[in-house]
Picture (tube, rainbow, N blue to C red):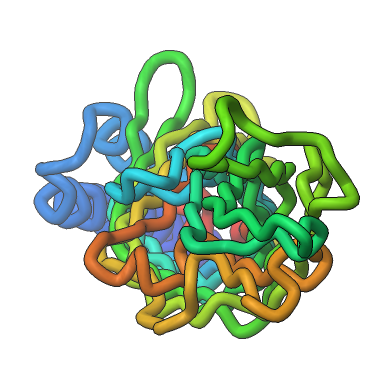
Length: 355
């Protein structure tokens, strides 16, 4: 009986020693893992080091992440140019939609995707005067008088609308501070106009300058002299060249993939959703002004008094614009929604049963 008691006592001692050894081994393993992680992330922020040292789960701004999503943007848009007859104002607006893929490595961001952008821009055009000398007044057949016909075109505004296909290639970085998480992106995107049309509106007046008589003859419909005649023309898409645009963006990010103190949930299987609000600007690097031989104004000799027969092209789609440059400009706001599906994190403080 006593031998049995000694045997049980020895078994209990060995079991107690094995439990203590196991605990010491697990503690050493945990500290070894913590020190290893500390050495790997010595360049990170203090908050990240603290997370690893104390065994807390790391934030979504550390490590590699693959994100997909979309963006919506609205902006002011215009054609920046150096053509004397064309104005930068009043401009117009643009709306865009993009499907995005983003790769994040710690704070570094790489973004690409495909997008569509609709643009509608108004351009004011300078007043123009045209002279047609050696005209003959056919209404005065008994006393034919030679005169100069003058056309005044004013109040002209040209509209152009386009639908662009876009391919963005951006890089950026997170800006993590005490008041939240910001970010910036910069890069290039290709802009290709595959649909569009134009419309030109203006007023016109015709006058007669007679050398034989004193003064100007005007508002005489029977002689073809008319005043403030509204003229409107529609045209096809301008043949804009492929555009390479510089992009800059800065904003704030809100994420649903965080709990208290911005740490990821313990399970690690919830959806990583990030919503960004940003201001952005796009500016064309290349000259996209089309090269054509179309006239600024086309006034047929056979119907020189008939305003409905006059022809007009968009100011940037005429031969007068061939020696000048024109570039796209977009300045506005962008909302981006990104989704990620992260794997589970390793729980350093958990016991062998992952509790």
